[in-house]
Length: 560
Image: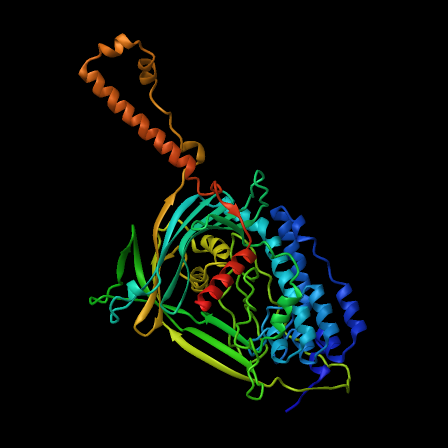
């Protein structure tokens, strides 16, 4: 059944009103008044990044309003009426394509479901470029935050456990992430690449974020490198991030007929302290920290799918997941999210991945704007547009979770300090991405979650534990002299003096020599074990070569 769009319903928002009327001239004039963002590659300082963020907020204030009954941005409206010119104008001006309407779908997902092929091509290309541009504008602030933090080495373990299912911890995937942070650099070592059901995909690899780059190896600042230690290869995770998508990539997006939206709702999360049999607060030791145990109530996980009705005919590729949550883009990291502060609709249901918090350390988000409409009489307008709704089938899986969290006041880091680090790792590590969602829950001030247990099924839960934290010393304090001066003086003695030395002197020299050897070995290990130095003997490669190798391997297996 067709629905009618009444322009007078959007009279409070000039951009909405121009799109609803199809007035391209007025829309172009409104967009021309907006400030222009600089080339993201020319943003090098934290002050420049902050000034660009203010300009982005000015653009968002006009283009990203959602103060209407359906919480639609002007871009959502352009998709509904299939106005490709309006969609291109808004996307070029800098509208946020990732913002969701009241139903929980962004404009690109709506375009896919409505089969607006031309708009899909426009939005996919602009979303890809905008995600990279936003990351580059954030980069100076992120590196500045890393520099202000202490240098450390940390370990985070991921494993499954169950009180009923035996041996689940051995058959389910598990790993320990080893993280180094020094100045503006970050490194994470992992051996778990992914899993399909209970089939674990292992890969001995490291993720190396170089905030300062490496001039000797021509590595630009802010690079994220993937080191495959099995194949001794180095990949640039952002090798194609700033380049336009190819025609084949865009065609693959247009062929999709199913979109997905997973999310964890923590807007109503509530901490409940767990007590022991004496009705006293329950405390446990997690590593070297003493923590109080809490349960988090009112956490909801939802998974929605929306498939286009094709009359019973399946289109090839329709079951592929559309990666609308671009890994390089985020409001608070690499996740597509939103945080509606004010809503004029009675539907206050949240459709974002996590809750945003105000932080003192770094302001990274591009805020979604919700302005209460003015109570004024709209100008008379008789033009109306009839829109045929998308023919889709929607399914939603909703599950209430009761995660457990162990909070301590003794951990050296604060939660708001850890989140920017997880933003970097969440780009490639899914387990870190899910942990980051839950860490946005508002914990008591001064506390840190050293352990988190998230139920997967009623009897199995995944446990994330911070097992080790060591503060790193400055680099110049790592090295010690090779040997003592007295040993060097005795080393210059004649052969006669050496031959006439007593057995006690010989034993002292042996001990001194062993100390010297151990010191040399320790220094060599420190020199060779610099976690932020690219290893020797590794060759640079591309993900295209890796994907071709995987396809060739799969085809070989099929022929056998």
